Amino acid sequence: MLSENLTPSIIVHGGVGESDDSIKMEKMNTCQKAASVGYKILMNGGKASVAAEAALSWFEDDEFFNCGYGSVLNEIGEVEMDASMMDGSKMEIGSVAAVSDITHPITLAKYIMENYPNSIIVGEGAKKLAKFANLNSVSKGSMIAPASLCAYKSAVSGDFQVSTFDSSAVSEALKNSSDTVGCVVWDGERIIAAASTGGLNKKLVGRVGDSPLLGCGVFANNHVGCCLTGHGESAIKAGLSRSIVNCISQCQTLSEALQINLDNLQKQTAHDCGGIALDKCGCWSIYFTGTTMPYAFIRNNLITYGIDRGEKITKPYRDLSKEETCYCK
Ligand code: ASP
Image (cartoon, rainbow, N blue to C red; front, side):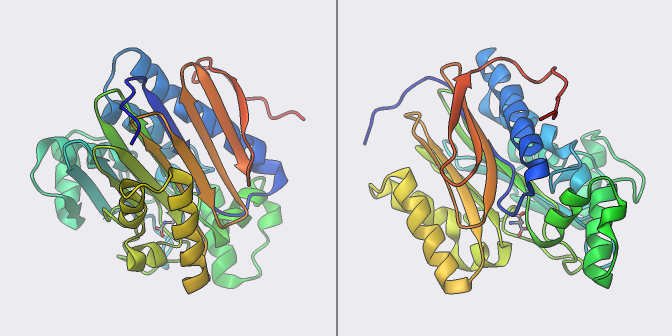
């Protein structure tokens, strides 16, 4: 196994799915910004958990990703979110499931990881904890974004005219696919893997996906972290992220482990998933069986990003978090 490298690095993804050409650029830009927010923290000596929280909070404020304000809706048209964070170096975890009316579930997951010996908190307990932690809570219904409402109505009635809405491409994508977000961060000392999601469009009330379940959607040990997206029920049955991390620990490369596990799952279940992995030597990989998966990776002041299969664009890193985005072609 390669020796540990102290250079901090971060990889984020914006979910496996089908992205229309009109929103591909936007998704890649947001991934770069989210990674940039986390990387800046690492460069200032901040911890991996803080960088992961900042990166995922960035996505949670963006209505074009299926988490926080962009979460898809459940069968009765409400938002229920899952999030988790795992510190692989300490084997510590925190996660929340089916939570509503808070803006940043990832912050609550981090709070649990850092303050309590319990792992997964749901329902009333999560609500109380969010209040206790002074997290930004909002009134019922205010986390429902227009694109998610369109995706929901379209899925419920089948004939809802998503084209009447500006973000029709986004709602169309949310209707059938994922856009969950996740990241793996190495700060020179700890590996953190984290995820945040609204789950699946029109899911049953109370449905919990793979993202808050350690070893399913998110897993890390003291060498490598892995974070997944896609059909949660399939990832749960396969214990997918733990299986990928185990394969890497048994000397498969990151890309072999991702590819073999995700291809197998696709063959067995006919459902698509995607994943990212990063280890403390600075090796990283992304693989998915769906059509697109936006991601961004930053290390040594270089940013690599893409969305289509095999796409890897590399350029010098600069702090993008404060820049306005221009999507002009
Ligand atoms: N894995 C998530 C879930 O099933 C969905 C996603 O990746 O977008 O809850």
